[in-house]
Image 1 (spheres, rainbow, N blue to C red):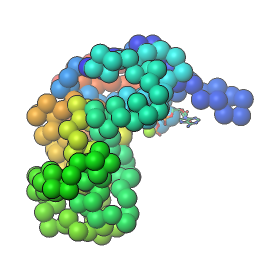
Image 2: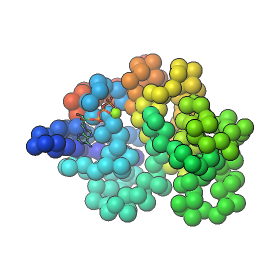
Image 3: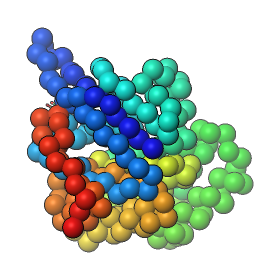
Length: 225
Ligand SMILES: Nc1ncnc2c1ncn2[C@@H]1O[C@H](COP(=O)(O)OP(=O)(O)OP(=O)(O)O)[C@@H](O)[C@H]1O
Ligand SMILES: [Mg+2]
């Protein structure tokens, strides 16, 4: 469903070139559970941002569900992203002045889904993600674990094919982190393709397939266990 062919992402800063991704080829099948590990600065976030259409390669090609997305316009990229991809981050990226429910419903609002349907779908996720007593709280009134559950609900409310998570537990204590991992794995068991960038080997080793990135290259790619 995802195929990168020889993808490079080069940043130029002050006349110096950084190869954040160096001709990476990677194929991910539907329903896979993949972790990406590697040293700081090795290119993990860059890779995830490319997969999530938040950034575009300097060279190489990217096929998403058979469609070449390398040459799409910004507008087409945004539309494809909102239909097919959910993204969560270490620092949640929730909108501070919106409640938990409003944050979760935001993608539906942007997609023009009517109020009644929005309410139905957000209620289901609020219930399923253990947020039933918090729908009216704003992010600063929620714990880290609760914020990340809101972020995951927002990421999956459009029923994307793939969920990309960049250090989703990096800002959480161990037990909240474990809850977040279980929630994502639960979604994966229902068929969602899951890609998790993490510094925590205990989390990375849970994935069925583990990738190690060093200096913008995949140096290891193996089934777990
Ligand atoms: N917008 C940017 N402009 C310039 N250089 C960048 C940019 N984004 C990333 N880089 C560089 O690309 C390289 C890879 O960065 P990236 O953020 O992908 O690393 P990472 O593996 O996610 O690291 P960490 O584990 O610290 O999050 C780094 O050398 C970084 O400095
Ligand atoms: Mg990173």
